Image (cartoon, rainbow, N blue to C red; front, side, top):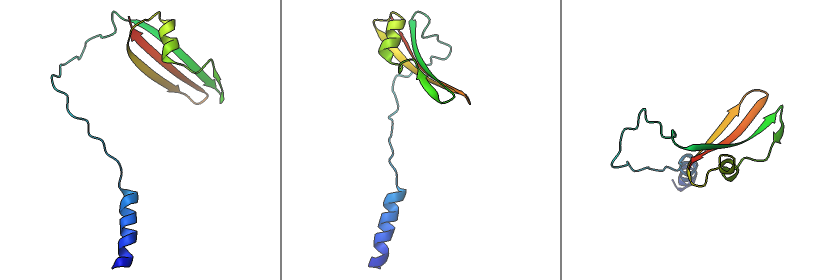
Length: 97
């Protein structure tokens, strides 16, 4: 019995995983159809890889994207990754005021 316990305990530890629970939010509102970025400025900073060579341009950063859009107060940041067979592009968009 003792010989079987150790492999069973090791297998249980290897199979088990981590779990996180996000609590539900209170005071939720429906924002379907709302254009939250209508009055905000947008700044973008991108880099690209072509045929495995690159990145062309510096690694994108939220600070550079904010400077490109003349933004002093950032509201939110959006990360975009576009991948085709021969072309990949990584962009950071900053929205703010």
